[in-house]
Length: 66
Image (cartoon, rainbow, N blue to C red):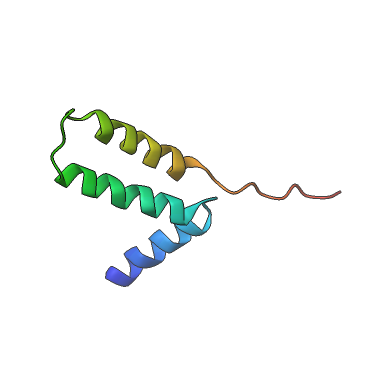
């Protein structure tokens, strides 16, 4: 089961434009949720939005030549 999930995640990240940046942002988001801060939930919301935006950026497919 773990191999199937890993293959699915790899297939998804191979289509992304910035897979390492997405991973870094997701890790920062997880750490930010664990560390208490002065202004609650402001940075969590911003990092969460950045993670979603990076996850939606796809590589552009080359246009077919006629």
